[in-house]
Image (cartoon, rainbow, N blue to C red):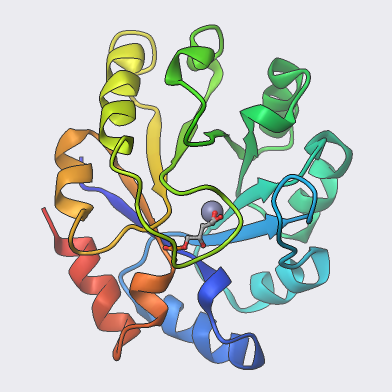
Length: 217
Ligand code: DX5
Ligand code: ZN
């Protein structure tokens, strides 16, 4: 399967958000990655419903919403009505993950679970069949433009093993420090969705950077 690319809006120019969304619409990116941070689960605050609704108004691609917030259950409906097409919650932030995942699916969204760099893939053993996507954090969540953690490759291999017979179609998304230096190896190890913030928006030509990341193999 060809990999998908989910450019992260976190690194966009918020004073020119409509311009950057237009660029993403015209690009070869597949989804738009939307990072929500609450200042509690991660040491940073990004944006909330009003901004997601504004993004949705112009976006012509599915919104891949990554919730870095504690107790996400409280807000799932609101994220759905703000425009989320996929909702990813953190394993570390959910007391009753099975319930949360089912709720996301009931809302008609693709259900993803994210794991932090120190969280082993094995914790997903009893939920892997229920997931549409696993997001492996390849940096500690909270900020864009951080350095990629190489142990990610081992985790992708672990996840490939875990999902091989029990959920072979699960999306394996990698988030943090993805760029042209590691994308090919991530894909050959088994990733099929790449998030890229800094590698896209700090490039001289972001649309071209998306194209290069999309065609890398
Ligand atoms: C980090 C976020 C990422 C971030 C990736 O906490 O979850 O989605 O936007 O940005 P880069 O690609 O710059 O590491
Ligand atoms: Zn993210």
